[in-house]
Length: 117
Image 1 (spheres, helix red, strand yellow):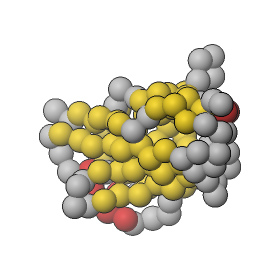
Image 2 (cartoon, one colour):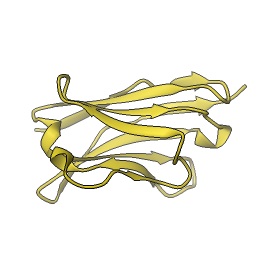
Image 3 (cartoon, one colour):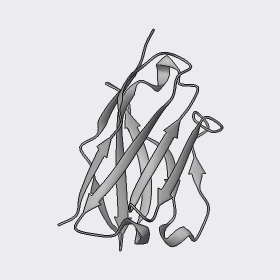
Image 4 (cartoon, helix red, strand yellow):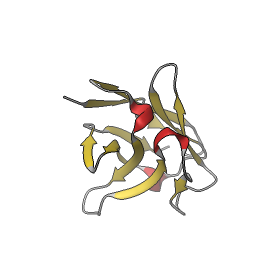
């Protein structure tokens, strides 16, 4: 059973930074296509960043976060990170990581990020 756990959310002031982590039990994330999504109340879930399995392929960023957010993997810890800089109030959302392997998706519970003075 694959379980994803996000951490690192919290309250930050506009212009600040946070780094979210996604770790897994029951599998090795290196072989998964990994992505970060976010959702705000009343809005569709938004894909904001994705990194290919085994490092083969391009990294994707939504226009809304390009240049401010960075998705990365750390093989030693088998974690996927989302470094978020220059945060804006409109970045406030629940952020979730998603892993895909062999057409099967797995989701974490999400972590709240609030950007407010």
